[in-house]
Image (cartoon, rainbow, N blue to C red; front, side, top):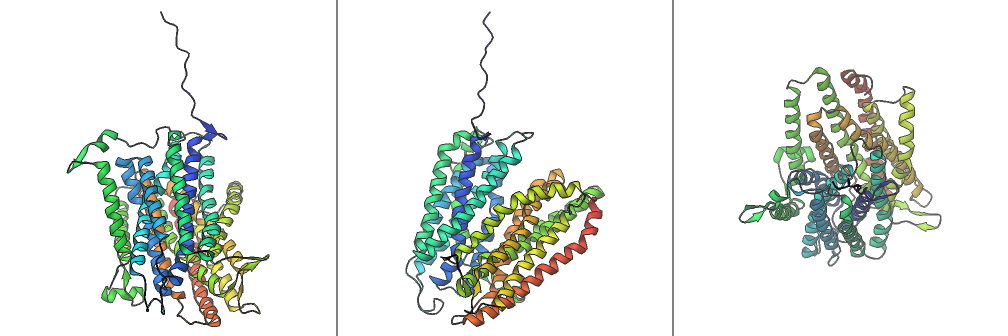
Length: 527
């Protein structure tokens, strides 16, 4: 009789008390967000200064591109769950991102004339649109799946799970903060192409480290059925090959969508009488389909309590689009204001306009542990506001952030410019609002949704973030300035526009406060 085996399974490799795979995902997401936010900090300035886009066109493209980048993760997550697996989806998305960022580095000849009326480099413009399409589709494949991998590294009852996600999400903000400082400075001071190139190179490094570190994912990110994925599906090509080919075809479609506008006749009045982007049309169709699905769900045999919870959640998700529509002005009119009418020198350091976007990530990093400490203590005393009230505060604080900049624009300094410190204060107030809505919204989806609809409602949450980006592009056109606008005229425009946005935020916040007792009665006092 042989002796019993004394071998035991090797414990997963860890670092600082967490699976090493967490840090692989941390670095991948950090460099992906570095590339994404660095490019976003430069995009409006690049469009209006290099290609001489009119302000209105620049704002609309910024909103259209970002909206697609936030909507496509729904498709990328679905494909990974059913066939591709998270690891392959991340690698494919990362490769598209690298190509897109490096494509943006080819800027062509600067435009001439007034708002490009003289001459624009047509080839460079098409390269730019194609590069933005590659980035949007790449984000769609990478972003949802890198987060899913993190969750799979831990058992469901592992007490380290929340801490692991905290570390992971810190990577997002570290990437956003450093990219706004580095990429924006290089792009504005040395050259647009150099800034975009830095984003591409560092994204490539992030992809390389993911490839070398994928062994630390412990098989948790593999396809659900590898044999079925490899088997021929159509025309002799496997499902995997068709997914990759479909991603490229989707990129071509997005390339065209980004530069396509349509005239809807009387319906265009909703856009101020202007043509609407094809993305806006698609957004309306998707929104209508989602609400029809939700109506069908509410007419099913749900209990009264479940219907109340789902109704509250749908209200919160809908309201979030308005919040993000206001919040994302920080990458449009706020950057334009910083560039055109702001004294950006402080402590002897001259910031670039794009670098001011780093303030948002900085305050998120600083405020996250404060709010993580605050909510449990308020809850123990019975003072923790419910989800609707938190959303109300988020909208009100967002509105007040615009009030800060409206006041600053109406009261410039002796040099006729706005002090950078007003921007610092505005970002602080804005991020207080973000802490009341962004992490709270994710919690609300998992808490309020019925089990069979959690995935759909989480998808709706991200879809409405995309709607918010599109709203931001349309709202940003209010702040469009004509060539030759004087500093005084620009200040007057920003004061007026930001005051209007302030009232939108405050009014929406007040509406949520009024709705709070009604919504809480639907689900009970804990919400």
